[in-house]
Image (cartoon, rainbow over all chains, first blue to last red; front, side, top):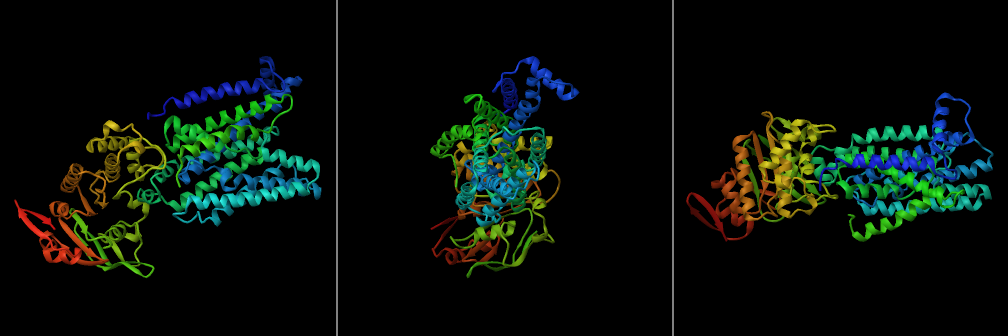
Length: 338
Length: 256
């Protein structure tokens, strides 16, 4: 194993390439002139052509939201895996995603029934609250706030709470009318198509803030690799670490999920690939997870847009199709620890 | 000096350590001896602050251990355990760097990097600094852990440091056991360091310890220097076996 000096450069280059492809290709192929015209219209506000507007109002925010969401999911995955010393943990396994999905579904159904429209913020807030509640339930019921909690207990509680929220979602789509039921289905499969500059700003702010906070914990999370007892001996306050890292994780993942719907497996796979490339130092994983998460989700979105052109696939389907084999590969390799 | 006052630990109905008051002098090697279930490890964990006592208190000098913050404690107290496993692959150098974690907030300073290099050199592991810890043998891992622990209490100023050994020699062969204990003696001779540990081997204890603490079933049998502690009577009482004590070239050898 060598120090991972060149990995950020390589990943940065791949990310630029991915962004370039994503900006140019899609339902409509954009030319260089249209892209530069779109950028100009963003700053000057001058009259733009249709394709320039497609670039400035749809495609660019979409690609940016992909990068930010990918980064958020990857960072969430790094934090959760470090906290539970287990490479098969991801935010989805501890209820965050299904809780967020339930919150969103509840909004779709109730909003339609009560003719309630609280503006574009209601959906993200509902999802965020759902994610926080579900994660909190899982951790409280499995006793994970205590020291020496078992990972098996956490995962099993996660399965139970996931099942609970999924049946809740099932119930809501059953009683919902067709358009709402369709929104629920789409949202549960994840989609970036709703991206706009508002969502980019919100997810960007939350991701940036959480990453900056998380960087303060990489050292303690490294120490945790030795186990809770040894980590305490080098001065780590385990209880506080768990609570604070968990809070960061719930915020970064719920906020991203709130705008994009449930996108599974990114948080699981990205840290694992990085670990194979350059070891497990959490600072390295966190910083490169931002790049790698961005690459993975931008590529997945490109695939989602290109496969059924001009229609698009929900992005969650793409990440699952790639993610499930990788997950099973990890399980079979036995590289996880209870 | 490290002192205990009526220190005891009770878990459920079982008294793991009966009230114990001892004084352990600074800059010496104290070894805790006794049969299985004597409470050796319990005593080390109480003295190092890893367990909270049911009654009584541990004092480091005049200061009660319970009043020292965990972050502060980590800068002068270290514990070398039997073995440490990692959940994820990590380079040896990164493992040793963990010993410096109590000293920096997010990135190591130049001094921390130097101490890590120096500590790895001292324990002869510099040549595998880049290897993955999880692929090392038991003996190699223990040397890495020793380097990490010493990096944690590396002498920089004249602060009094305390090192606890919780059966650290279990996975080492004879050569490294002796090598390890000689290094410990060397550290005690040259630094402001007190070492308190658990060993199973009575002969190693007789050869290297300044003081011995003999326990049985959570109770102190005797505490003092070798002449006081390692007698036929005490050993028989603790282990239920008749020892043969051989005096050779000024050294005590215990045979059964």
